[in-house]
Length: 106
Length: 120
Image (cartoon, rainbow over all chains, first blue to last red; front, side):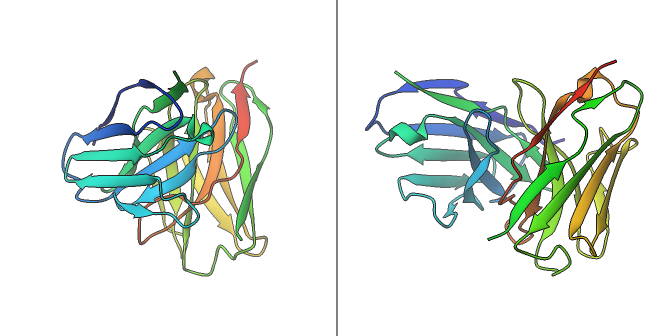
């Protein structure tokens, strides 16, 4: 099984900050990595696919990078709507998710 | 714009079978452009992929659940369904149906989710 490890588990930040979340895979997944945002009581929403491609309608302050085993999600100029939990998801021959990173107000 | 909506019982007894249906609107599940699947989230925990049904009806399940899971599709109703047998309290979760983009192996969009509790 490919394990996905996100860090940090919780991140405290202020509006306007630049924040970075890291996701590491236990083996190479090339670029088959997606990022989701989930707010309390809501379904996850796709932000980034194939490591760095921005899903249609997602603000450009969200960006993704990486390949192989290490990936990052960056939110530049953090907005009030961005306080949420973020999950990475890999596809190798099946789909697994990271444990999540909660971005909370500092 | 495609929308997905889960439906089914919110309470299931231990050892019984959990049955959920996902109704898709705004797009056809038999178009061949997308595949479909189920993902769950236990209370306060992360996301677990359950299984996928591909165009043509082939299915692929999480190995940890494979012996208990069946996903099927009813193209005449534009629905697909999940059955999970021999449930225990560990199966208590919010269950989401979602559309799979085969070219990116990502899941946009998701249904709103339905909470299922396993309890006697």
